[in-house]
Image: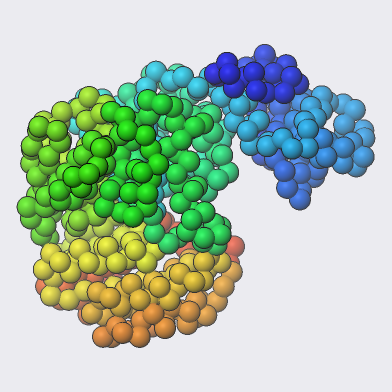
Length: 502
């Protein structure tokens, strides 16, 4: 833990630091064990959670003075049995939790670089590309992201793209203590940055992919969403030597580049020639070919030129490849190392091709924003398929304004749109579909089928050998949320069952 950060802590918290190494640290009352230190985050049920932690044997509870006072009044007998560490009313308890986590797990300075990837789309593919690069060059990578949290010899399913603060720090510590990684790569969501889940981690490098409409049920507007994403590139997450790769082909990427100082560790990447007036380092790429077989690129950086082949499809995947190469060059890799991308199979649920004996071109993709749908469909159309058939839906209890935009995005490129259910959660699937329909007005043909399995079956029946069938929205997910229950479900499995393939 950095000394200057310790000095900023209240004296009562600094006094706890020697205890931190000896006892468990929790912020979830349901996980508290005897002797633990429990940090009470603010909320309507803070006092209730403090009581639960106390009943579970917490030795110390850290809370703001208002919550501490309410706890003493409501549960005087419990309060008398433990150490109640009361902090001023204006204290940000997430700052305290992060400081204690960094102290507990000694993660302020790690023996390997930690790279954060943020943006609306591309994060998962980029972490998989990094992992592939490291593995192919005899190195080891740790990853925390949408699909799972993994490093050699370990894998956990991911309930969140970016886990809670204590899980972030404990996982990084386990990667270090087990001596199993040469670098760690984290997908960093806007929620995680807003909620300070990665606070206390000093990111040695960061990638900004893009920013398009998403999560406006959480962020008040796009400006707020951008500000959340931008935090990864500034203190306290970034030091003055942080490496950065930023997409200059995107408006928000250019806006972020303008905010960052000129220094050697920043690379702006993009397709086509870089703007002459830019003072940042530039990684440029030209798409030599983009077909159903994949990408062929030519890169330029400083005085170097090299070519790269990849089975990935589409210009947006060319940008993902550029992002990885940009950081890799700054980390000391050479263009010769990038030949490994020729064998990269892709990330699960990211334009994942489902091989089958019928010779159909079937793809499963996680696209669940208007921009992601536009990008993936545009690329499938551009590589030469005769028709594009898109099966998609919208999630329930999420940003309703996105729904007609999703429909319009599909209508822009699909020859046939099959509107179905996604994760309806606590909304009626048919009501969600009605919200989407206005955006599909310009689609040549629209089919509605609430049952997702039946919708996929319709798509497979309509698809010919020269067509592309895109099943969008769920990607790697192996569940469907109906009401408050997660039911086992996989687009890939449904496709394979219908086509009777492995």
